Amino acid sequence: MSDLTERQKTILMLVVRDYIETVQPVGSQSIVTRYHLDLSSATVRNELSALDTKGLLRQPHTSAGRIPTEEGYRFFVRQMMPQAQLTEAVQHTITHQFYQAHPDVEQWMTLAASVLAYQSQGVSVVTAPHADQAIFKHVELISTQGRQVLMVIVLAGGEVLQQILTLTEPVTQDQLSQSAARLNDLLNSLKVDAISALPTPSEKIDQDFLTMIEQDMNRATDSVSDNIYTDGLTNVLSEPEFADSDDARRTLRLFEEPSTLQDLLARTSAGSMVGGLQVLIGGEGRWEELRQYSMVLARYGVPGLATGMLAVLGPMRMSYAKTIPTVRFVAGLLSDLVNESNVGE
Image (cartoon, rainbow, N blue to C red):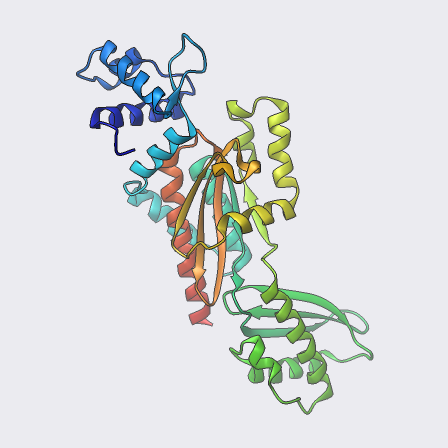
């Protein structure tokens, strides 16, 4: 919108900010009074009309003030996104929470979802870090009952794969521990394709477990993380925009079907880079599921090792000035934790 005058840009920014806060159409007199503008109400009214003509504002009713259009919100986001920062106090609080948590991926994901929902007052969505190509870090073999064994595989980046196996004959915990130790030495930091090229181990028990490890790692490489953590759904449902029961049901449906949410994240994040940030307003004409919402997304992690997605979903009238820097900061923090987890172990 390079054809906007500086005065029009200022007035548009004020209308968006006012509407986000009050959920009421914004008139010329309220802008002049609230922001102590050195302009007459008539001048502001003319500028509001011009912004309406340009498709950045609209009147919900003939006699009402203006509210932002999707394009108006996009202008607002482009203008304020580089400037939006969390205060040092908030950054310190969030950082302290993460480093006080047990160094465990599930705890990090749960905490990230909680922090994002609280800070943004929206609904948060976080996916666990997923290996771009599975890299072995560690395996544990735990006897459960009879011939059943719990196999837990930890991948570089923190992703955990586990399944219950039923062996052809009983094996003691001591035998399982010895096999796990040999496999950990053999497979340390290997990618799944390198594991496939290894010679066959001499011990039959190691051969069997190696085959299962390879199968699990191949599945992990081909899939998208299905571990999705959410928080703050009531934040969105309590907003005036979703007072209508049909709108509320559509919102609930989006979060009740993990596969739908997983697919939505995969499509919206396609091609995104670690450290990059996207703001989708009204679905951008591509995602019908997001037509009533805005979504702020970021990819976190270590490229080539493991990455995940985090996002905040809310009404188009969300607090972008708070949500954007919160998503950016938490994504950076999770990237650091994924990196430190890999280096530390």
